[in-house]
Image (tube, rainbow, N blue to C red):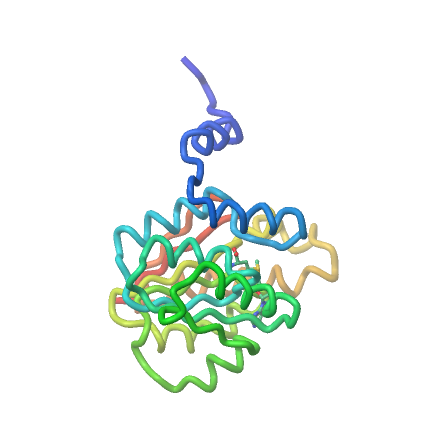
Length: 217
Ligand SMILES: C[S@@+](CC[C@H](N)C(=O)[O-])C[C@H]1O[C@@H](n2cnc3c(N)ncnc32)[C@H](O)[C@@H]1O
């Protein structure tokens, strides 16, 4: 009997059995790797597919488009959903636009080219989205959460990626380099906020770089 399971081996084993076979998604991933664009890990890709297949959202908000890789995964796994995705980095915006042109049903996708904080403040609507995927500046999550919550419908799901920030978030603040302490503090605050919020049921998962799932009551 194996006494302690090696988590890396388990992960590799799982991924060896769950490869992506959509050619467009694979080619975007290859491009991202070649050009050093940060994208979701394969285990997060599978987790998002799982959530989307269960939830079947009609409306999705993604914060952090990059080149629209995760956007394409959501689009391909939920063809009827409308997706609003936000990116503020000029170079990524132009790449995302090209990929949207090439791979998406344009009637289903809107790329918002601005800072997510500004978009969230300007959008005064309530209860619009069934699913929110948060994958942008980690230090801003805590500042954005109340606006995100307002935009979520009842039973909507918020997925927040990279909540462990390569394991840094688990460390004591005294072991964190001075320049990274603000983000460490803010991510801890964000996690406390979503866990303590009575209007959310929140669950944290040790998948990829950590992902949280918050369901709005
Ligand atoms: C990790 S990447 C997103 C990866 C993408 N979700 C994927 O997996 O294909 C984070 C992106 O968020 C963008 N970003 C960071 N802060 C932002 C902000 N305040 N407003 C809009 N976009 C932002 C960055 O420019 C970057 O392209």
